Structures are given as C-alpha cells and as structure tokens.
Image (cartoon, one colour):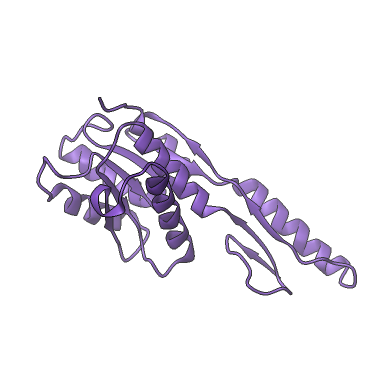
Length: 199
C-alpha cells in the first residue's frame, strides 16, 4: 500500500506527499514581499493535515518577516474546500471595514480561491489592485479564471508516477522492497491575481 498526498506515520507503509508547510510559506512570503500587511487565510477545515501544514507555513513566513500573526493575519476557517465555501468566506472578508480589511487573500486550495474571486468580481473589487489572491494546487481552471490565479503548484504527475513505482516494486519484490516516505517540494506560480506591489 502507498499513501498518496499524506505522510505515513508507520514504518511499514510507503507514502508520497508534498511539503505543504513550504507551500504555505511560499504563498505567504510572496504576498508579504508584495507589500501586504493585512492578509486573510481562507483555511478550509482545520482537521485536515494539509490545511494545518499550510497554516504552519503561513505562520513561518510571518515570523521570518518579523510580523505578528495577531496583527497581520486573519483566518477564515471554512467547513469544506469548495467554491461555495470560498464565496461565503469572501462575503465575511468584505464585511470588514474597508480601512481594516485584508488587502490580500491566500486560500488553502484553488476551489476556495475561485469562490473568493467570483464574489470579488461581482462586487467590483479589482484583483489584484484592491485585493490580491493566491490559491493552492494549481488546478487546470486556475490559469483560465477570469483573472488568472496565482497558485502553489503540486507536481501531480510526479506524485502519481512515484506512487505507482513504489506500489509495483512492493508487489514484485516483497522480500527486498524498502518502504519510503517521498516528499516533493511545491512551487509558486505567479499570475495576474497577485502581480501587484503595494506602495
């Protein structure tokens, strides 16, 4: 058996995953370096390990920049990683007073980000001029969104290929197979939704 997109806690199981902590850090660092100091994290359900890891990366980027989480980050937990949940989170973000609401939003996945983008567009909030937006996963729709979406890309093909290779090796060589925990690094793909540097 091979766990995919999840790290194994057992020595007798293989796993193939992505460093989600690093992914959260990359997204947050990009927004901080673009001048944002009021950032919303639309997190998804915190019971999910990937969401917790991405949040840890967000915290690390803030710490590295010398910024306090209490002052510079507002978290919006959602019950699901869906477009509808993203729309609900966007409504909550826009419900804040304009002079104190977030100037950038990082979403725990692209579906949430697409929901946020729908509401921002409907409310005539300019992306990225008024609010910058970054998603996670770099799904096919990210580049084709109304405003092409910056996103943390996971190497999906390499994940699948490595998992298949480990599974075949375990099946064909049960006596000599070595269980491995393979962790890939994500990369940030910057598109129009966050290409704006605040003065």
